[in-house]
Image (cartoon, rainbow, N blue to C red):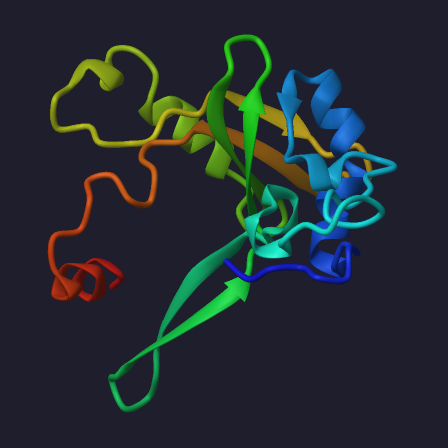
Length: 169
C-alpha cells in the first residue's frame, strides 16, 4: 500500500469520504481518513514517522490484465470499486463493493440468491455471502454491496518468495 504524505484524499478516495456519514448511519465505519474533518495524525503534533501511521495508508488493489501477447500485466492501482470497513454492530471486517446497475443490473440479486437457503448449505457452493445491499445516496445507478472480509492478505503466511508470486495471479 502506498502512503499519503500530503494528507489529502485523492479523487477516488473522495468517493468514499463523501459517503462516510451515510455508511456510518447504515452501520458501517470506514477508516479514519475518510471521516469528515479528518486531520492527518502525522501533522500538527510531535514528529511522527508517516510510514507508521494507519491513516496514511491508501488502499490499493492488484490489477491483473491479460495483454495481447498473452502475458499477465500486474499493476497496483488505487481501488475504485472496493473498500474495507467495520460493521459497527459486531466489529467484523467487511468489504464494500460499488456496482453500477446499468452495467451489472442483477449482480446483487444473483449474489443474494446464490447465498440464500437451501443453496448456501450445499458444500459445492463457494459464493461469498452478501450481507447488505445499500442504494447509493448520490447516484441512483449505484449500489454498494456489503460482503464479509473472507481472509486477510497474509493469512496463511507465505513460506517462500515463489508463494507470493504464484498466489498473485
